[in-house]
Structures are given as C-alpha cells and as structure tokens.
Amino acid sequence: MKPRVLTVANQKGGVGKTTTAINLGTALAAIGERVLLIDLDPQGNASTGLGVDMRDRDISAYDVLLGDVSLAQAARPTDVPRVSIVPATMDLLGAEITLAAQKDRTDRLKKAIQGMENSGGHLPFTYILIDCPPSLNLLTINAMAAADGVLVPLQCEFFALEGLSQLLKTIDQVRNTVNPDLDIHGVVLTMFDPRNNLAGQVIRDVRQYLGKKVFETVIPRNVRVSEAPSYGKPVLLYDLKCAGSQAYLKLASEIIQRERLLAAAE
Image (cartoon, rainbow, N blue to C red; front, side, top):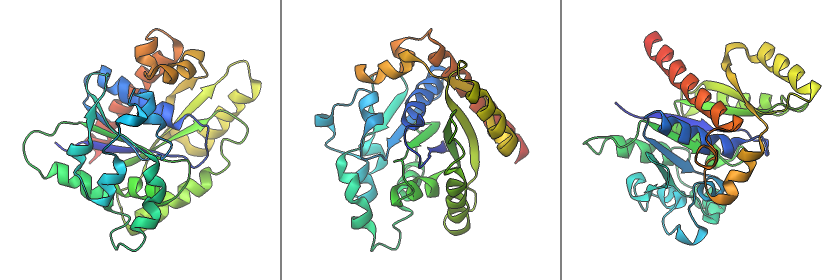
C-alpha cells in the first residue's frame, strides 16, 4: 500500500503551516502511522522544530529535487518515534533557477516519491507530509504535483479568507496540468482565541464558504505550542497534556477517519 501524500500549503505566512506539519506528523505517528516529513521551505523551520541542527543537513530536499540522491537516502530519523524527515537548507532558494530549464521541473518530487514506491520491498512510510514555503512558487507546485491532497492551515483572524481564492486557483491549475487527482483534503482552522469575538465569526464564515472541507477540530492559540520549537521538539513531546497537543491528536484522528471515507467512496 503506497503512502498517502498530503501537502501543507498556504501562501500567507504566519498561519501555523509549519507548526501544523510538525505536530500533525507527530500526532499521526503517536496513533501508529509511519510518517515522512519533507521540508520544502528554505527557512527550514520544520527541520529545526524536529531537532535537526542546521550544521547536520549535508543531504537535503534540494539534493532530492536535483536528482542527486533518492528520497530514501535523504530521509533521516528524528527523536520522534516513527517520524523521519528530509531536511531543508537555504539551497532551496536556488531551486527555481536551477530547475527552470528542465522539462520535468514540476514533477521532480513526484518522481522521487514514485521511485521510493517502485523500489520494491516494504514501504517505510504510511504518510508523507510536505511543508511548503509561504509562496506559490515552483517548490509549492512540486509539492502539489506529488500530493494526493492539500491540507490548508487557516488562521482564525479577519484576513483568513484573503489569499485563499488565489490558493484555490493554483490548486485548479495544478489539477488541470500536472495532477488531475489533486483536491483540498481539508482546511485546518488554527490559532483560535475564544476571547476574540471576531474569531468565532471567522470560523462561521469559513465553514459557510467551504462546508465539509473544514475539519471539525480547531487548533487553539497555545503558549506551549509556540514554545516547543525552541526546544527542537513537537508540542506533543514538549507537553502532551496541553490544549494544543490534544487538538493535534484529534486532528490526526479526524484525518484518518476522512481517509477511510475517501477510500470507501472510491
């Protein structure tokens, strides 16, 4: 059985995209899944958040995109059981220029994942999560071309829907050109503060606009979630009992349930 590939994307920065990728991956692993996180953001925050030091990234996602190494060679274990990562470096900033002249420039990551699937033997992962940069560039398109679905973190604030229409257009373009099966797997509402009256209105607006695409689980604004990356840990390892950890565990369960419904409908 091949792994499910989910791209975590939103071109708007500061919405909890990398935080969601790290902690969702950890939560999926906590309930028994085997997870590979591919860090495609040149800032490398997902790599740092999983404890991979900047000096310890001799092989990165950039090398995979160039075809110099396989995905299996680039993947390295983390301190989180059942979670591996392909780390990012600033070299990814040059990927667009390096790959621009290549005919398969949008399919490099897809081919790398297919190469792992076709290598024979027992597949090491059941889920692959791809953390994208906060922009709609060639890296993000590579991630979408390789994905079964897009997971969209959306902050509970006034400008939540701003830019979402552009992201939806990009998903449509990728679907029409390189990945006809691509769809929005779900929208995750993040950074919810119940003391903010506007946050509740934003949730109602988003649910009205996107319907069942929005997950029931809402990720709260939580100090422990913000603190965890500075210790190189997901929040589930930093403080399992905090509200943020419990929310990501619920989200992981909801995602698996949604996967089962999708599989049953096929």
